[in-house]
Amino acid sequence: MKKKSILKFKSMAAQGEKITMLTAYDYPMASILEKSGIDTILVGDSLGMVVLGYDSTVPVTMDEMLHHAKAVRRGAPNTFVVVDLPYLSYATTRDALKNAGRLIKEGGADAVKLEGGREYVEIISFLTKSGIPVVGHIGLTPQTVTQLGGYRIQGKDIKSATKLLQDALSIEEAGAVMLVLEAIPAPLAEKITEETNIPTIGIGAGDKCNGQVLVLHDMLGLFEKFVPSFVKQYELLGVKIEAAIKQYCEEVKGLVFPSQEHSFPLNEEVLKEINKDK
Ligand code: KIV
Image (cartoon, rainbow, N blue to C red; front, side, top):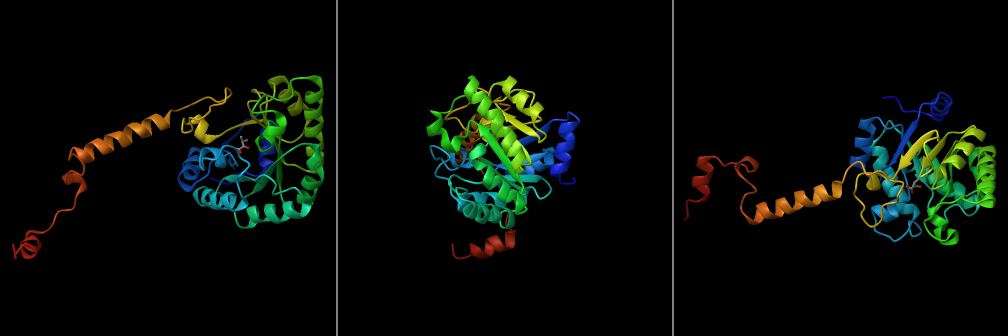
């Protein structure tokens, strides 16, 4: 399969074909996603919560993002991969260029994603002019969840809805190639999608965005601490994995596993020789 490009995503959006995006953090999942034909993969800093066990995305480091981005790239060599810039790695244009450059050059990212509205116009424009494709992310921005007053829907009143619309327009003007809209009312996401010319990717933002993204561990039932209401769980793999592991433990203790089928036999002559002193 040929790797999709930003131009392809633009034309899909123009033709009303939805763009599919899911997160991945490691080689096996990335290869399954690529085999499934997903349009694009996000190595999100949700990594911190669903894989590394932190309480938020704030502690995630550049080294951690790079480590996982490289694994995803190895698993999905032919898929467009977006990698998150972690918290405080893009506070200045200098840091943003250095860190985004590493995600592209070392991590194999096709684009980087950063959270924030028009405050980041200068950074987005600087990265874009430096040749780094940037994906914006507005609405519920987990890196600044404390300032937002918790994991809650954004843009419900006139002031915040207007700000989000203006943020989207500024981010597009700064050169962003795509825009993630997280946890905002569906009609506001629809309005932003209509008003902008870059593909919008929704998560908890209704069905009118140009594409959808979910955290893989949420939609597969692999992260039980908290499941946002906008997540559809397509599987409960955590429960299945636990059952498989319990069965393994029972079979080892009950001498059921390994059976002959899972053991290597030894030639009679060799067996006699090693037992000859008995
Ligand atoms: O980190 C992440 O997984 C994300 C998605 C929730 C969009 O930013």
